Image 1 (spheres, one colour):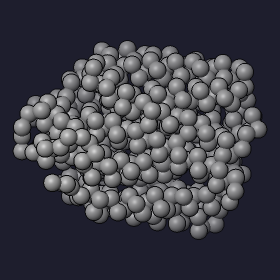
Image 2 (cartoon, one colour):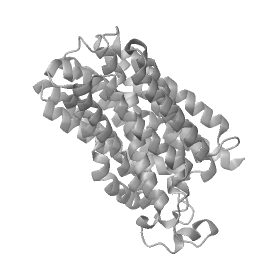
Image 3 (cartoon, helix red, strand yellow):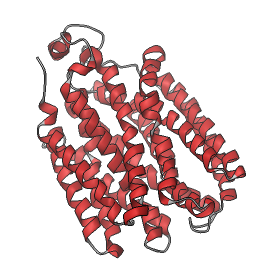
Image 4 (cartoon, helix red, strand yellow):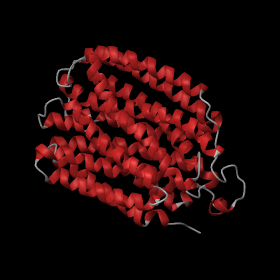
Length: 400
């Protein structure tokens, strides 16, 4: 009972950090149509904002892991908020000069902060308690994260007082000044937060039954379930980013009124899935079974988005998002299971795989220029099919 109580305070603080991640990423869904409309860039070029944000994971994923090893989880979390504040400060001169290149630089800097925060909070919440209930904790964090995605465009639209179609670059100054102050405050709060340092089973090199599988391994490249998990995570993050970040732009393409309000569709779908994860995992549903069910939902959603009439197809992106909901909570513990002393290195590889959020949406953006907004969602189908394979058998592959 005491142990459960000890989880509550860290969960509250880390939940706040997951909300901050979602808010920072949700800003992109507002910027994409604004930059496309005011700077005259193409759809493919506008989605380079996401590419700049997510490309940092493959560059800084390992350095972030090394930073955690040197200064610990909590100080790395605080550092990430400072990096976020610097990034949002860069958005202001980007807006003043109306330079798309500077916006990409600011987004890249935001991505660095995101990388350091993701690298610290995800393994932290996974190993904070028993591995078999990690998906439940990750589901709670997922609610905090995904509710923040639509909050960002709604917040920006509220502070600016305009819809995305009417927003000018110069309107971005005030909201970004507010965001800078909030993220600096979050950095101070995270530094002072009562977050104990945690270690995964066998991470300290001790010999235990749980870490026997890892005891004779020399590197993370000897864990097939981890490598396949990293590829699966790459595809999952890419398709989830498409589901979360394209709604406002898609609504604009369909000439739907008040486009920013459609940002809630995917978040509602994901929160419903997370609530199911909290209720059913691990008591009624294993993490692997949850991954299989979610993959099937994602496949159905992807097909319905591209096959249904355009005017109602946007609502089925919510079904894609529902499918994505438990993928992160299920994938992360399945991929880092039994890594022992390689847990931090394995986690850094998974963080690097988040670069899928740069690659898949960028391809989506250029496909939109070629085949149209609705047909570009075909890119989600092969991603969900591979995730289904990992949930059925890929996570079971081990070497002797």
